[in-house]
Length: 105
Length: 237
Ligand SMILES: NC(=O)c1ccc[n+]([C@@H]2O[C@H](COP(=O)([O-])OP(=O)(O)OC[C@H]3O[C@@H](n4cnc5c(N)ncnc54)[C@H](OP(=O)(O)O)[C@@H]3O)[C@@H](O)[C@H]2O)c1
Image (cartoon, rainbow over all chains, first blue to last red; front, side, top):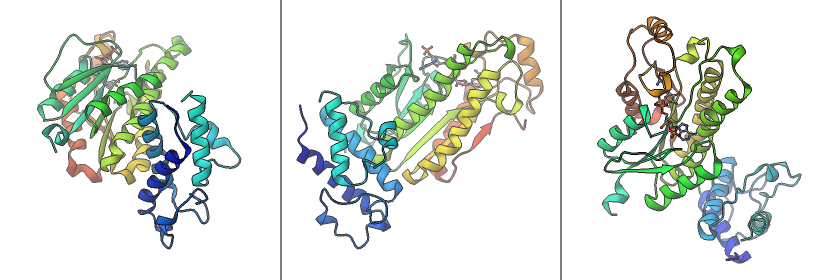
């Protein structure tokens, strides 16, 4: 079963909304208006470091449960990239799709 | 919510025999639904206990273990990282492969099982992780260099993970037993054990219930403010 990009973006956005609510950094952001361009961390990012870890774990689990895969989002490759794949909703979506593609899902 | 969903769930690694098996029995008596693993299947059963064959040092097998817990129970409250191996040998006679094996099971195993546990515990913002060290660590016990080095690493993991997991409502502590009569120490000569016991404030062998007593303290909900601690049995060392 291949995962549609929109489905994955939906999972990521829902997760970001859930965990951003707990972060002070999200104050002043309209959580209903998030999209692929939304920055996840760094200066104007929505999440603090704990929020980012929580989102990555949550997305990983939801994807693996629904696809029957065993992807690890926060792997060494992700950590060593010059531009973090976790910087925005869109880049995270791309990265997860790459991982799924590599697993043949 | 059905009764099963309300029942707390515990995982004991290295549950096949020795201390692990004892902890399984006591946790089941205390009302937990208990999962356990060891590399070999077990020839015993217990109401409320489910055994999964898994090697804690193998990442894929650990993932399999947690998929089973997620599918069957959907939650996890307590993890006891009890699976462990020892080796008694003069440092100069210890092959590097022994160190690798001990490290894989004692350190990597604790690392992997802890990481996967958090994924399940996170949902309820509650978790209790208990690791197994040994009094051989503070004693710097001669003849146990590889074992002591790996259990020191377990203590370090206990402290660091206690910081990193606190925001998830998860505590991480360790219990460090004195010699307890199990297969683990069966090959250690009696005079060596006696010499060790003589160094304790309370001069007797440990019992599995001494371990459970500390485990019970760490895992009770009231111990939410106790984390990153190692309790050494038998006295100051
Ligand atoms: N007994 C003592 O005097 C003493 C003192 C201080 C600390 N401890 C610690 O207490 C813990 C339990 O010791 P014990 O005395 O009960 O040992 P034990 O009687 O030798 O039992 C160890 C259990 O762990 C399992 N195990 C070993 N390697 C494993 C692996 N890679 N994956 C999954 N399970 C594995 C074994 O089953 P399989 O072989 O089938 O996998 C067995 O069920 C250990 O961490 C030990 O270091 C013991």
